[in-house]
Image (cartoon, rainbow, N blue to C red; front, side, top):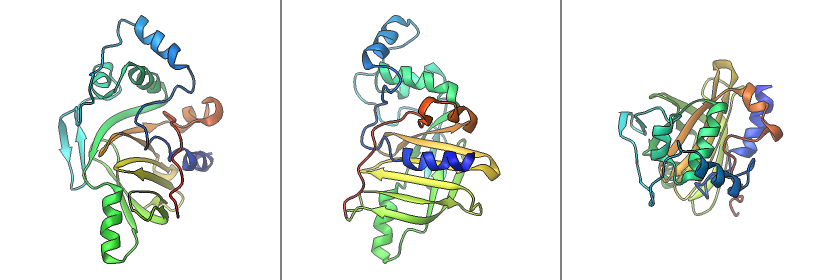
Length: 227
């Protein structure tokens, strides 16, 4: 079952990197806005995008993990771009275990640039987990645009060949999925802004009960990089 989930997520991970707004696959935009306007608990969100909206609690050479439980409405109001997104993130809470905003200091395009400078392919990735944890990934496939600014990587968690990892990126925005049944790691990362990723751990059983087996916060699929 987890591998079937991984196959679904392999397709789903390429969502969201062209648009940081959540979709309304279950409800029309009008319905979401109506719910938001009726709910007195729904706060107003900033009129302009606030970059790096949360303070950093810990860091590594490649990531900065922010303070706060990003499933709480008081934190969601700081990271949501608009009331619609606030509602979607709150609704998503039933499908995830935890969510955290992570700032990424070495995005995929930077690794691609370094690899091309040395003439070597990208063989490893370091992705953010939760609370200071990182996932080391062995890359087994790639499809990168000649510009190096967009593309996808596939692979597995180092030391866990039965796992599945996918990452898609375009112009500084990244989305990824980690499915590693052996060590119980199920993660999805969605871009908030360039260099900012909302990382969520999820329960694969709850995921599979979603009609149509949609990914968490599904968004439009990015086009395949041109040859």
